[in-house]
Image (cartoon, rainbow, N blue to C red; front, top):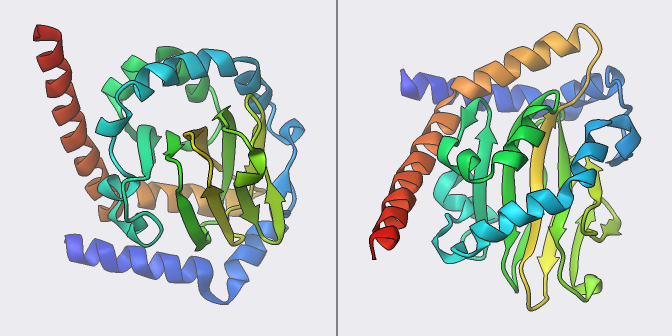
Length: 252
């Protein structure tokens, strides 16, 4: 059954990317247009995140006290190994396609309240790049999603901490949103001496009927897929280990 599910996931990915026809269809039915970047005004909830960015950062700072114990991206999602094969990209997951990292959310209650109010939120985590990390050029496969970053810790100089999307370079700003279509090729550099941290979200793209129905069904299929279930199991294994280490330190 699992092998069949994996085959179906691969077929879905081929359908979503083949010749770009479905991407063009999604773009045509997009309620927010088809562009590389989007404005915060198109997503009213972004202003709420920006207004509360220091609240989020305060919870993040507690997480960062144990940054070396956080999982690498590829430890949670093995599919990320091509772009994350070292220990320089740490993650702290809150949500991922229907899975709630309950204990992580409990440690960041205000952040959790804020993201749970976002329509169409599918993925949410702190994306933590160590000094010297380069994420190579890649692209997302689902145009039905829109990528959101909220700058939380952005080291200087900004010229050495940047993201290139399509042919444009962008720099994060603390407390500011960066919203883009990740199906355009992009890559990231942190060539500073400090950690760069953003609140990383994937949001369901607002679509007109009938593409809205197709997108909803695709997201449900992804939620039930072996890829997500394997990532969920990997995260729960890390979470159990982290919780045990926490209790051990409390007893010392």
